[in-house]
Image (tube, rainbow, N blue to C red; front, side, top):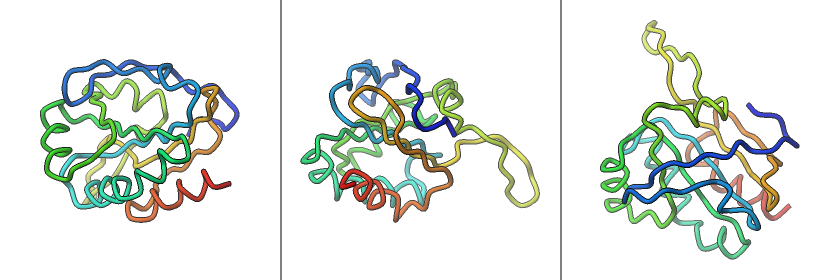
Length: 152
């Protein structure tokens, strides 16, 4: 995980509609930046839907929610449409940003080792500084935990 108190690395990625988004555009508001493995999988769907349920409370507190995975723009579009997700999903097909944020790690499944996205979440303040960092978060609990972090 990147260290608390450091400047969050800026990036520019495409959303589900092909629109470019940069982290620097969010200066002046808090950002919940979460990295997840794959659209339409059970854990990722649960996490996204809880973020969606709590989204009005995040925006009320002046925070933006941004999800990033390696999935394509079209996959993100289908995911957002199917589950009515109100926040931005960004496509990082080469895992460049995922790696910058130290969310790309060796994993193991059924004895097979591979690299993939570790479910991680950062809370970034209005000045672009990382103020909280969480690795290997639980999909159903992470959004509520992030809301508590905003409440201080």
